[in-house]
Length: 389
Ligand SMILES: [Zn+2]
Image (cartoon, rainbow, N blue to C red):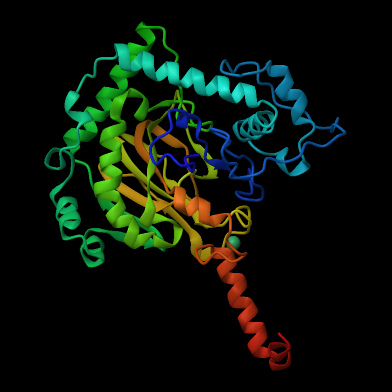
């Protein structure tokens, strides 16, 4: 997405996808790819098979209102998917099919960007915020004392004092004041009611979440930019230096909503970000834990899970989790109540550019790492080979 020259948010960033990963097996196949503004494709959507699999009984997409093409087309296309995709959830299959279709419509892409621009302008022109104080970042009102102190301190030791690292590369810490969480929830609800009254169809944060809203679209872009540059970047540059955390320069900020009558869960995926901040805002809920399964490079994104990478995280309102965008994860189904989270995808155009020229080995990828270690072990066990190499 935002890796062309402009170091700010793209007006078209709403469509930024995470990349959904394989279905039941959690990570056998890389499903989707974000074309966004067309500047980059993070993942290659699969090639469809020439011959349809007539034995496969495709899902129906008839009940979905937001489809770009007739629902029957998605069902028909499903039969052309490579076999490993056929057992994926309908949502995941849809994400793949949308990516496949996106390859064939540069004009559609431009139209979408234009549509998004108009959507933002319409909101900017008419929407009157409910809590205006949310639109300017005031550290005293926004953050708990411990978080402010750590940022002021600015050292790795200072950050580690307020954080837990329950699994490698996952950092959790108390961050938002309860009153700010409550106000953010109210603002989003207010915006949703306003959109209904004005007959504006809310553009959703990504292809995987059907409920929620992009905060950048409703005017919080400046506030979130401050949040990233002044508060998260200092942490990310120390904790996520290997994956571009020291050069974050754009973001995509949104809320996602889960409840029994909305989205229940979120499939296994990676984010279109270098570093992701995920803060639970409330309200009351049971279930809905995040599950993590290790950091992977593009090449190994669908690789096996190593047992030590398995980690589950229960949300606590006000508490944040910070992780690499390439840390594979998903959200389990909530079992009651309503859960809303603030998500900030932080991106680095520099890192994305450099990644294009990177050789095979990614120091931060669990699989690359394991393979390198394996190779070393083989070489040292076989001194002849070691010399030959
Ligand atoms: Zn790798």
